[in-house]
Length: 76
Image 1: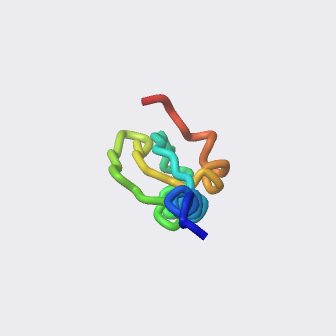
Image 2 (image 1 turned 30 degrees about the horizontal axis):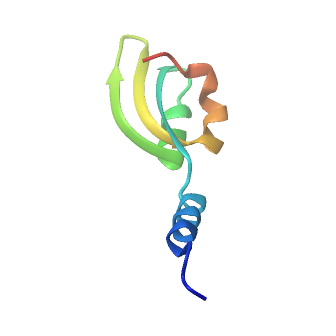
């Protein structure tokens, strides 16, 4: 054994263990009160701006958890 490729192996293991996340922006009506707690439980809330009838939320979430909030996603 020479140790050749050990750094590449470490990198591959590290990448496999790190969750895949995505930055998202959502506009959530106040009537959908479950969404913000869901994001807090399944991601990192970066910013919340309260509008007249909704919340504008910037967050980072694991890709596997995003499906439930897709209807509320808006462009940057």
